[in-house]
Length: 327
Image 1 (spheres, rainbow, N blue to C red):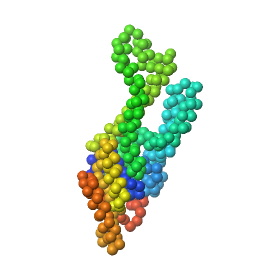
Image 2: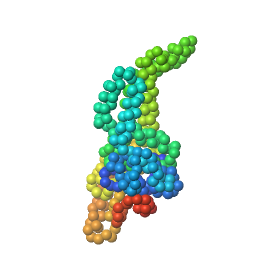
Image 3: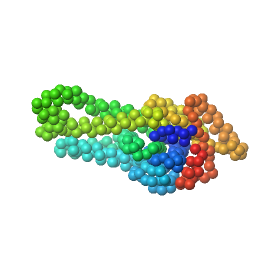
Image 4: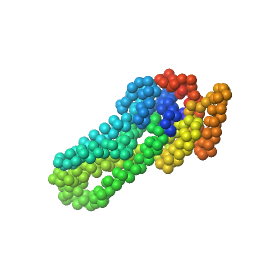
């Protein structure tokens, strides 16, 4: 189920409760696809930086080669916010009068720790990666943060698009008169002034610059929103353990993703107890089956793939190669 899904999509998201093995499963899937000859990009949005620990090497904000056909990158929320704020500050400095730059700096400093700032910055970075990545890679695999963070991230495209639309609304009326101004034709300078290209009117020039930035952001947000909503192109895989809390959280996450218009392609039940492991583990396996019956009852339409416990930690390429063969 899992590899068939990966072969069929351009973008795969892996999410679920913390500690269930999202990084391991997403990495093994990415490696398996790279082994089939695809060009794959593996992206971690989890602040815990487990990707580097799993591959037993340093992975940062810049794309690095992890294996033949497989590149990886970790999105550090703090670093992403810093870069995001610096870019916004530079843009505002260019657009605002010099005497207001200190106010801009003060506002941006206060905004750095505002609720949702990390999610917004990560979201913009994800939009950039998708926009550029689909042209370079056959498959982009996202290893996301625990369920709550991921659910908020998945609804951001709609929220950010609506917010940006609101900011540019006051210029929409002016745009409606664009054709009228063009038709005047006899005075070409009038059209330039109307569209904010009048060097004698700094305020209008600033308005034009702000509108240009907002339109670029709107297109970026809309692009990721459309990608997330395209079930032929994108799918979400929920990883869980056969335990009560992960099962209940999976049911809720599936509902949240459905409301956000994100297609859930399947479930991966990780760390299952193998058959024939002694009385204690057989009781544990029986308990797993009980929880999985609830999962089947609540989400009968979703395909499920079980991965069993292994004797040692999955660390490094060799261990990932072995796991990739079990997918």
